View 1 (cartoon, rainbow, N blue to C red):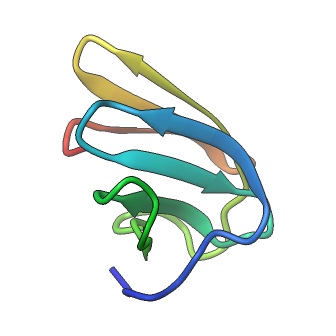
View 2 (view 1 turned 45 degrees about the vertical axis):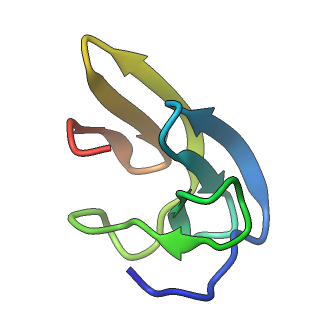
Length: 77
């Protein structure tokens, strides 16, 4: 994660009570904040380098991320 970065063009938001996730559509992927949006860090580990996030869905304890390159799943949110 790279601290001090911010999502530029947010298209999707998701919160789970512990963190806020922002999906960027400028190709920068997923960002995560654990302090109510004061600071953000990219959270793209295991994801392609250029990613346009379209939506987030939580199901059965996992977070699904719909993107221009497919759907990705994480249980580490």
